[in-house]
Image (cartoon, rainbow, N blue to C red; front, side, top):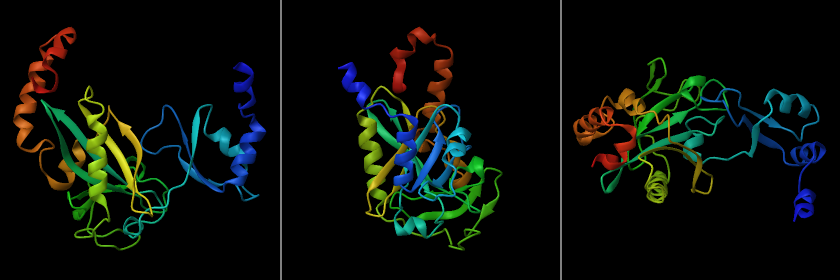
Length: 245
């Protein structure tokens, strides 16, 4: 078995050859990275692209992924990044629910959509319509995208309903986790693509900054009371009160 495994281990030159044969790729550090920092796209099929320098800039642990071509309704907003949807689901007692979702959007030629890297975010309805103005991390507001001049309010994103369905279905397979911040996009075939799932920093504040409403809606008061109660309960006992019980 070991010899079979070793035959499939890639050496450095194998990696370089694969990159050269597969064109444009998205590169990012796999650890100690957040907010899109350190991420970039490179077309390794171009001879002028220095593969060695590109890999060294990523550090010792990194991920290289195939690029995604987004749905035209997403590209219309901003075409240079894979704009994603932060869809937060949470378990409360015996049900699974949504926090109002936002679309995250790149800006200024950036290949990432993170607010921490200069991007912006805008509320999106359950049916897939952008709502109101987009907001930056510094709370600067835009009625239209400064690069494409697309007006945010009322712009419809195709197949967003599929994203919500996928997020809810996946969370039900992880019932032991209370809150998940899913990052999705929609590809050119209209199918939802999961980029990553966040179980730590899920960014409750995004919907509050865009819509000015509490993240948990009508359950907010009850959930806040439960959180205050949990602060008084020893960690060893908190499992007895999980998900609002």
